[in-house]
Image (cartoon, rainbow, N blue to C red; front, side):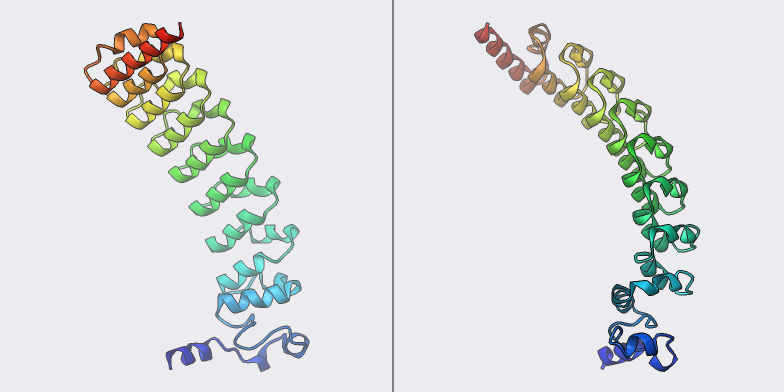
Length: 249
């Protein structure tokens, strides 16, 4: 019974539809299934899939979902007509479909998902415009794609996930700028990647895991210090590495 009532509610009156003659009679729409007048996203999607040439006529429709679906089918040249659409779902479609050289228009959009999509599509050399975005997920996308040599500006980001992404991509010669990050996992990442001759700067790190990373990579002069480390795992790793280096010698 409930399903039948829903079906009735999603049926539109074909007699009042402007496409009755040119689409219904030609089998290019179907009441309750493929219909632009229905308040059903699935029916509207199927209608525009069958009749993409009609999408442009619905970009100013009162129903946000009808505009959003129509935006998927109109030409790229007409997308800018929707750039100030009040509904974020419509603008999200634009973020996916706009030509790359027009994406700058959405950099300041109030919707996070719109800005994330922009950060995912913008040319890497233009991403700095979003490096100070107020949402950490947007900045994380930026940190993933920005040229590694320009990531230094994000080493003090307020969010740990953003800084972790930076630590994984920052050029080795710049990792010294993150030696004293407050997050243990970030310092461990630094210890894994930093140039071996810079590892001595981490010898006094309070985290045993950081010192263990040093023991796995350091030269003998640093290992000789770590064999006296208070942590047994660090101490054993240093001793093992020293034995290995002596064997190879």
